[in-house]
Length: 317
Image 1 (cartoon, rainbow, N blue to C red):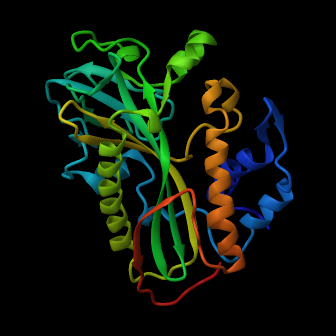
Image 2 (image 1 turned 30 degrees about the vertical axis):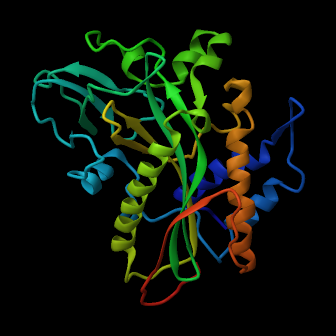
């Protein structure tokens, strides 16, 4: 059976984690029992899908602008150039890893197609003098007639390459892109990521993130309630930035949840197993029960939203 473009994309994300193997005693080995054939079998299943339709999910940055404009956690953002003064990020609507992001003072001379214009947050909360953002991992699930949202309690903090300086307009100061560390030197990679669980404000910001994700989940529910539905599971990463007033601001959704196995060797030693642990937990605790029609019991996730969907009919395609 030929896979659709969206299904091929999702298969590629999942296959990368489970087929490429996992880190055991410092060496890469195939995870026992996980083969390309097994993963493909899950993706061919008629019991569920592995992604949300775009009308129910803000996949691209322009979609997120439509969904969240005016929300208390969403920075001032426009889909068209507002021609305003001040400091702005111009982000390609489908860009990744900071590619194509423009930092600019004033927008009168900027003209970029297929981009969003997002106002710079001038008072970010710093970590050891550097700008920071948080990468959270989220799972949306439809199963047994309910929409559920699970959050993986561990996250990681990404730091800017250079110390913060609001008077300097440098991408290595204002972008928290781990690629800057990777390109610099192997030794510098240990400095670019921090465990969220060890962060002094972890509990405060985690509670704020839960509240934001409950609001987001309700937006998803409002859009899909009453439509024909199918069992599905959708995994993604979400970037948020804190400010000095302890507000938490939505930056963007990432199509994949985090570093793939191909990128894992470039991570600091204390992070190498983390993305794989997360995806294996998704597979073992959420996907396998869906396939076998058993009750979901999670040990490694926080269930933060659960609401019964109304639908015209349940479909399994």
